[in-house]
Length: 297
Picture (cartoon, rainbow, N blue to C red):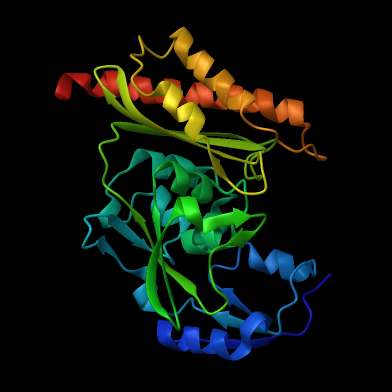
């Protein structure tokens, strides 16, 4: 199947892109890397009248440090650039490289963008899950001007976000926090497939004691989710190490806190079991990182 006939407009600036989206309203779709949108067009799952191509807007490739001190990457930053640690403002953040390496195959990572992935809001998207776990802030701009939205309030449901029809994502900001370690784990049937379950964990650890925790899951609900009630169980706990029984208890609590759907890829029971395994691995990875860094504190 091929995409239906569609009008095409290439914006040269954010202002022009916003104007085109305002003009065409719900009949328009934003085209960034196209790695999510183009398959949907070919399957007729999306049938916009106009594609607004933002791929030429250099402003959306900008990276740097925000006034709030966060590390910003432009929405057109590709998965491959993040995988290779090629965004100076982010430095060599290992968890970003790990998450990027799970996305599709090399051609997809080379073309696909972090902004496009977050706007698409697939519940199993690596960037959506990691944005929640790292307390990322989504920068958007529309006819009403610019605004900053915490990732926690950005994802509304199945392929649904807080973006207005005339808004585009201009950047993703990762706040500099006291978190000493973050880790990402996912399981897919084949390399490059969408995750059946994905888990991102960020822990603020001080000599094994957890001062704060952030746990996010993908593939277990209509949107990526945080588990604040389980996070509170970890706070104040002193982990003896990656093999501590408390790690398994925390992972089990995550599995008990969710009610994932069943579909052709996995049953609800299987997703709960995967959640327990992946959270356990993610937390253990954070603790191993904390142990390896301990001598340099």
